[in-house]
Length: 469
Length: 68
Image (cartoon, rainbow over all chains, first blue to last red; front, side, top):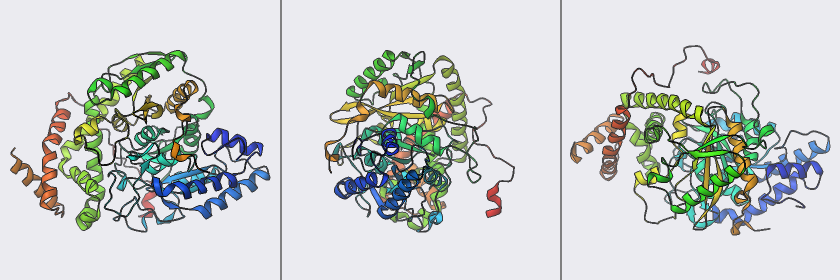
């Protein structure tokens, strides 16, 4: 593949395509060969669309030869999480419960937008059941294994998209995030993932989990690549009333503007000092702070308001919202759900109507408190998770400890933009740096991620298993 | 509340929704209940004053209406 390979960024691939040093068909064939070699071991795909992907790649090459340039995604192989409807095949949500015709085999708006940008969609990627379960050997679906250590989980629930990027099975892809499901697999797999401001990207055609917590967004190799995808995905639709029209919205043009002069707060007390953080993760955070300071930002610790309450408001609220959607399915097909899925969603039945309303009041209180914090700093950082990817079958933390070691849910309660970028390794496994900004400041968040990645090479690391072809 | 009360509450709530899990799974759910209740107590302990919930109802027609 000449100057680029399966681990190049979208920007590099797009440059090579424009320069004529590679073709979309060559890129797509390489990803197909890699999937042939690796997917059985990694569990990235629920469905592969090799034939239609090659057709789309050939179309992209013909268009380019004819002088048509659809932008940086034109001819780039991407994966799509299998809770998002696509015309090529059924959406399963990795469950035996979802009706086979869910979504009507129509493209969700986010898929339509990727196709319009010329992207090559290689297949549907694995998830946790309904984007909430956990790895489940009792159901007939692949177990998503971490390319950095196949005895470890990828994280979820955008498991296949995260693992697939790390292994070079596609350059980037779509995930969804209700409590961290883009950022957690991004952190565990050593890739970048962005949960955008709530309302920027339509969720129609996507199996819901928590209606007011769900986000659909990009995972990719770099923050810049996330910006390229987000710029294509943003915009309201009539059939998703939560979407907002923010007019012209572009993140990529400013992504290399750096962080000089920015004030960055470190939410250390809420996360690193909270009792659920590995010392190696804390050390990585210290190095990240130094890198951002060296890039010209002013970095110092801040108190994060209502951390525990916003953490609770995410899980309890999404359980309640999920229960509302799943109740009839649970009543008719309890045993067809995975064990953790059904017990997780059933907790929503224990949140009363009054409780649910109070959680929504807590979110509003949090929104106001964050406005005060963002008057003091431009961005807030912390580890994405306290610990790296868990090992399959290892003695588990108890449930509350496991959830508290995830530093992602408060930003689903708040709807704020949050990016995870690789920030080092602990015991040979990647850990992530989370960068959070005010509502609709996605461009600033991605800019900080790109500035960090300009000074580090964690996002360039490739797991040994991926070196095929 | 006692463990027995928690189990009864979980069983009753789910049965009201037409959901009848096995006893072992009801027991697991009942074990979660004290934590869940503590989390909600923490939410109610905040001074939410006159703060209105974030969820809002929009009375205007939407394009989806015609599809129903």
